[in-house]
Length: 601
Image (tube, rainbow, N blue to C red):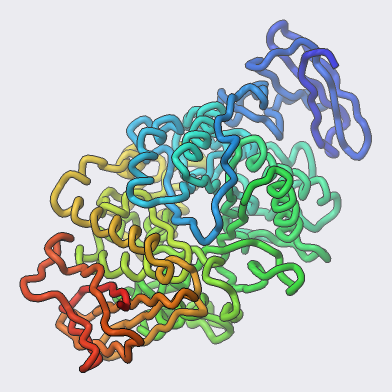
């Protein structure tokens, strides 16, 4: 075939389509090939050429599968040669899921420049901390230059203000060069409200179901086969063309499909088959508030076959326990037993009544392996929504932050850190937008204000359209050099190093984890075993005063203290001796607000 570009568009709602090209200015009709598909080959059209699709109504629209939108969500699309980038990661095969230690970041606020390229100089730092996977918040083209990414409307086009396709590929290639997997956050439950032209091409949306973002995506109604293919092809596109290692599917509880085969099951099977064909390990991770174990069960067990999911219950149990917060969904948590149940089983709510939901909630996850749960003490949602923009560093004392980090990084799950958490970043992180439609911007502002009315005062409300709201979220990298922040960073580094060094801490064996607590005394004791016979013990004193914590019998001679949060090396207040786990008396005394990690020797 002659050099040029093959265009193909699924547009069953259009009677005709044409391709408008600027240089030389011309309109090329597309041929309908049946089933709503239009196609045209344009010889001699080079990469970098801009174009638009002209509908039978005379409107010029971006390509629904545009690879690049350099002029924004309303502008023309640009031709990209998918084979032009020179990859250097031919030997990269991915990581085992249980080896993931995820670092969630927002491209726009991670650096001063706010681009994919500007992340690369920090990758060496992340590997030095012990991170093994970088998770990018959504990068699909969104309105304006700043947004969380969940208002994306061009699912195939990496955000232009972040640097577009070539910069994203350079970032992924660099991550693999540093031994880092790349997790991409994708949004298959809704599209943003500005620049969303998909409905003009096909039946992408349905009024049968409603989501918090409006009409649901049409996964099970008339002509939904093309819609399903559009989003499944998108998942394969990121895996194949951008070499990503995992997808994080946003809010799958907003994906409605009552057909015989659920969309998520079809997506997971196609994604895994493509990864196998490519000779790589690649994973699908869900965000879900359903507490439905079917999401992560294999199809042979009646499940959807996704590899893992975020576990909000772990966060809610730990956060509410430390802070005493009971607003909103935290009303269902706050007991020591909630945290111990999560450590042993995964979900806290597995069928009992939820006061917040006013109904029974969840199913048992007891038989699910620990590697199927991604856990966190902070993420973009919990900071901006539950805490009104405040990070835990602005809510908890330094000692309490270290207790939370100990539970997180010594848990039998996949840990996730939110950017800057590892050194106690204090910058606020609010929801922000840059809508060009002023009426829409006003509606978003008012909607956000009403959502956060219970969290912030009118004086504290962060206007999402105000550029200062965005700028306040930028990381203060110089903070790492101060004594307090460097001590927190050392603590995180040492915990992560211990998790990697000792299989009993990093094996994700929930079935080999014991957890006990005392509700009144507020202590937690966790023992982590490994098939090799190695054993670790984590003791946490959530009370403000010293506690003697029972440790039970040791199978060997002693417990060796590996890490103690109150130690001066970590900026702790300890003035006395370190807490020795006394086998004879079978207890260890910890100061208030402290944690200790032991290895059996």
